[in-house]
Length: 119
Length: 99
Image (cartoon, one colour):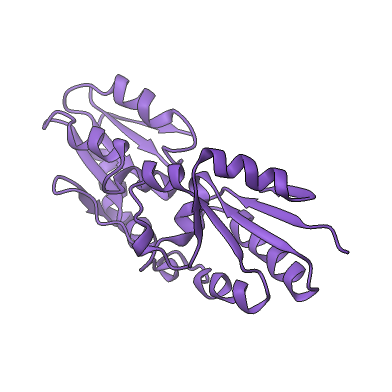
């Protein structure tokens, strides 16, 4: 049985390569049928906001990669309720179906996985 | 002497914005670019604080950073392009970049 891996993505989408790299790890792991979970925390939740236009910054959209997660078998997707609330993001307006977790839920989530990476 | 304060980091991941708000004086300006435009996210405490700044303080943001992140900003916000940014940095006596 492969070890389960939780990827915690906490960087915003357009100011560096980190958000995309976290997503690449998830997609690569998914392609190899590893049990992968992804948690959007802190500024990472900005990746989930809709109607973004990264082309104005000469950047490629992350949205398509995010939508690909379930297709690659990465279906355990989570976001922190607190991070969303602090940033005024509403769950109905997210571009991806994620399960929202409060702080106690986050602790339980991390405890459940064999390995964790935070980017 | 008026100062244009320029921020480019997310206000949710460090304290530059809150420190800057304490330093702003009458006639100063605040220019948000890069991830600093997340401060204009409606419904956040940061956006509320910006809306409550005295009228004499100009609130500016770089247009392309706003549209990339799908952020509109409050009524008082003036969006600027790069030539506008250059004009702003000449309009104030000095520029303070919060690197």
